[in-house]
Structures are given as structure tokens and as C-alpha cells.
Picture (tube, rainbow, N blue to C red):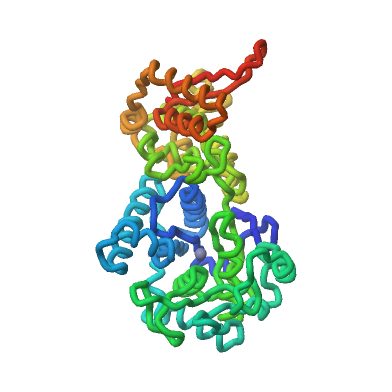
Amino acid sequence: MELKLYDTLSREKRVFAPIDPANVRMYVCGPTVYDYAHIGNARPVIVFDVLFRLLRHIYGADKVTYVRNITDVDDKINARAARDYPGIPLNDAIRKVTEQTAAQFQSDVTALGCLQPTHQPRATEFVLPQHAHKSDMVSLIKKLIDRGHAYTAAGEVLFDTTSMPDYGALSGRKLEEQQAGARVAVDAHKKHPSDFVLWKQSSADEPGWESPWGRGRPGWHIECSAMSAAYLGEEFDIHGGGLDLIFPHHENEIAQSRCAHGTSTMANYWMHNGFLQVEGEKMSKSLCNFITIQDVLKDWPGEVARFNMLKTHYRQPIDWTVKSLNESVNALDRWYEFAGDADPSDPTRTFLEALADDLNTPQAISEIHRLTHSSRAGVMRAGQRIGSRPRPGELRACANFLGLLTLTGSEWRSKAVQDTSVDVEVVQKLIAARSAARKSKNYAESDRIRDELTAMGVAIKDAKDAKTGEMTTTWEVAR
Ligand SMILES: [Zn+2]
């Protein structure tokens, strides 16, 4: 089977050819563990889990190495630790925050049906040279200085972006443009505004490691260069992450890795999943539409969330809505009904070809839908064997391939059927309060009420009355 993947760097869909088919290597940037992961963080985890499954199918389950890191050193973590545990030494507080958050992340992504990556290294274990024959951050930074790609200034070690002729190739940003367009005051110690931190000094109570440049801590980008090289080598097959990581994170990973190792490539395929928005709006804490994976799992089985994510092609933006989640429940209901007690046979060729075409999950899902139609037709024509035949085993096999339909029918029914009783009076009062808030242009309040309704499992729809021109709101119980 020919696998084609879209590569952000070459900006084209290409036939995938691994460097070593006996060890196909993929790295995906993992979470910075300081807070609950939001539903946008779940997207790359699910998308690259499907790719991991596909690669294992094509090359063999023991022939694929998938590394997803955990960033457990970051100034956001320090700030959170100081805020949440003011009474204890900062380093102890940091450990509490990172351990709890990492454990929560593991349980979240397990509930979303994701396989464990082959390795999940923590950044703090790769700062100093202590793993035999494994890459580490301090050694990488030393190499960059030795090769003339980094310099020290004002206690920091910085990457010299002008030392790399094709810096900016992934994001398409040119250094000259960045110089001209730099709006923020250029840090006086930087040679060029694009130069970025590899190492910075730590105060006595901040996390720090002894290094040739004093006690300090690494910048974010160098973490992934060290951990990917440690497990996958200087050049590997696939590097993935969200679209928002292209610049500066992935651009800088490429710069560090290629300049430290003297290679022309870091990874052969750069894959990026699209953005996620919620009910048509960008997710942000200020809009109060910030949904954690935990929030989703409170209201929906993990399988519904996973299906809902895979209905959209990974490179397209996705709109996360209650309506769509409801449709996902209904689709899974149908699949469970048709699959019955059938054991999985083999996924169909059409299904696998869809996935092999740059992970076209919407196409793969329509193939599964088609199998349910075949089942229907087959049942109606039982005995005649004309046209379609029942294919519950294939349906289950295809769905399983996507990490779906993993329960028995009765497990699914007991999970999916939850209490949907909604107090009509409360809903009507909230909708009236929301309309009043909108009339007085208090949109923060009207959004807050909408979110409250969403959380209750109520989906609302605004429309203009054709006759009066007045805005009216209709609602329905989400499930
Ligand atoms: Zn990374």
C-alpha cells in the first residue's frame, strides 16, 4: 500500500518512504504540564495516534518508534507552582504540578482511546549528559557554540539565526523581513531580533542545572532537538505537531538540530494538524469557552470525542460543537447496532486507501458508513445474495482501526445513555436572561449564559424572525 503524506516543509503531498523500514521513526511535540490539557491539545494526540496505527499496520507493530515528549521545565510551570503552592520550596512545588498534570494527561488521552507512544521522555531528564550514548541539551548547545551557530551574551546562550542560510524555510519567514518588521524593541544583547534562547540563567530558587554557562535552564526549543535525537537519531522520518508550532518552535528545532549535527534535514516529513475552535469561536480563557479534555469526558464517552475529532481531515480547521458531538453519538449508535456481536475481520481496502491518502479520516469514515448501508441492504435481501451482503465484521475491523467501536454493544449503551433530563423552566429563564443581555450589548454575560447552557447539554440556535426581524432563540437537548 502506498502511503502519501503532506509535508509542510516541501508544501506537497509525497509518497512516504521511511529511512529504514525496519525502524520507522516519528516524533510529536507533547504537552507542557502546568494545566489541564484543553480539547485543542487532544487533536494532535488523536491524529498522530491514527498515523501511528497506520504505520504499524504497514511496517509491522514492532517496526515503528513513536516519541512524544513531556515538557516539564518551563516558566509557565514555575509561575503555576509558585501560585498554587506558595508555602513550599519552588522546586518541590514544581514537582507537584508536573507530576499531577502529567498523570492527568495520561488518563485523558487513554480515555480518548490513544495507544501509548513507544517513549515519553521528560525534558528534565535530558538537560545534562547522563544517558549513555543519548543526546542531551547541554552537549547540543556546546556543539552549536563550537560550530559557530550560537553565542553567549548577558548570561544567556543564543542561537545565531544569521549563521544558517536557509533559516525560516519551514514557516516561509525570511530573516530580512523579520528585521524590518520587528515591532518589539530588540533585546540589546541579541545580534539579530530572530535569535532565540538556548540557555538562560536561573535564580537560586528557580529550577537550574550547573552548566559551562553557569547555573541555568534550557529554552523550550532545544528540549525537542535533544529528545528526538536521543531516541530517533539525527535524522528521522516524521515530525508532527499543531499548526501553531510551525513558528517559532519547529523552525527553531530544525535550526538547532541541523546546525548541531551538520545535516541537511532534521525530519523528512513535517506534519501539522489544523486549529480547533469551539462553537464557531476561537477558544480562549477570556471568552470563557475554554474546554478541557476533562470537561468533554464528563459529558461524553471518550469514543464520541475521538470520533468527533476524526470526522474532520487533520489539516482542516475543526469546529467543536455540541451539534456535531450529537451527530457523532448517533453515528456510533448505528455502527454498534450493525456490528452487533461480530468479531472484527479485516479492514476493507477502500478504507485503508483512504487513510493512506494523507490520513483522510473523513473518507475512511464514509467507507464505514457505506458498510452499514451494505448491511442494511444485505439484511433486506437475505437469502438472495444479490448486491451487498452484511459486513459487520469488516465494519468492526475498520472502526477498530481508528480506535473506535472498542466496547461491546451493551457497554456502549450503558455508557452512551446518560441522564438527559433538563429542567425546561430553568432553560427558558436562562435563554430569556441571555436575550436581555444581548439587547443591552452585554456580550460577556450572554456568552457566559450560552456556555452554561452548553454545559447543561442544551444546544441553542439564534435566528432572525422572517416577519418581525426580531432575533429568536430555539433550543434542543443536546443528547
Ligand atoms: Zn517540540
